[in-house]
Length: 443
Image: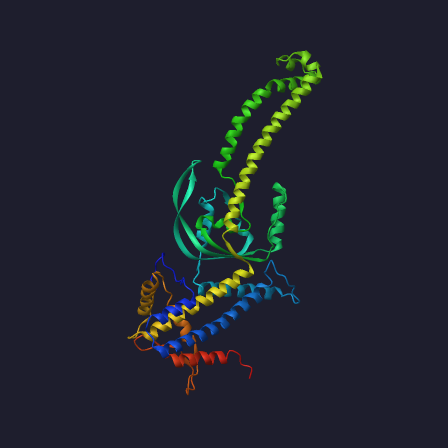
């Protein structure tokens, strides 16, 4: 497996197309072609059965963490059982993601998204102390050129690091953590709305997410305007407020003078250039008061409207990122990942078995890896970073009785020189048939 950031182990073609590609390669005669198709059929059926067990394990352990569960539990797990179910779920899901050729994202990369400027002009904050654990995996890391606005109407090209597929699993801490946190918030700025259930696990599956926008995927993200946007609202507000205040100044003076007159503050009243007749006549005072309130209120309403419009635009930008790029949530994420892992495992085994079966000379794992990568590039034009170790390990573990033999035979073994050796098609199919027949042992 060649280490290359621009190549990945994912095979971007359906399993049936890979089988057809092998058959069209011309390495098998007519009889072997039929036998190879039968081999692929029973291999696929066996792995479908295996991954059905994986999905059942995930579903059984996720039921207590599912925030959208539609069924009630007749038997509540104990604390130790609850903790073990969480461990089982995470371990099984990690293994499934790796089999689907997904790679973990480091915490450093996630925190960098918070510190660096996002494509969406927002200031974000994620409290990672809210999480019991965070699991983040991706597949496909590409550079993409997009147009972004700069200086109002100008546009410029910007190269963005895009994650083609991203899986995020979050477990929130329990109720006690958020109750203590809520008490602190009430002292500062009142109660905040909680959009998640403490203690539950939330799973998300997204497509084409810029690395710098990963922070927007967290359900507890807090967004606010950047300093630039705040200045763009504040500076025009100050500029607009000055003529309003100058226009309202005479009325303000009348209002202040009326207050001083009421308080018998004669010395202070002499310093204000307002005639006493204007003060004694209540109508000018009322008009001055009303004019000032209307002018100030209208200005405040206009500024608040601008702020709300800006906030709505921000919310739309976030919605576009979360809604239009979302592929699945919660339980459906597990179903999709198990299906993808099953597909990838079968494609890898088929490619490895076919090339070992048809190779005119024995191959080491390194030679086999290079041969498959070159063959895929020649046949499809796709440059992949084939993961040779997984399918070799799987073929070694597929073992069963064949013909008259009384001992189990693996589909793959290594000779003294480290070459890979696979069973012929007939015996390989017999091994898979034995495994299928013995999937359940009731007697």
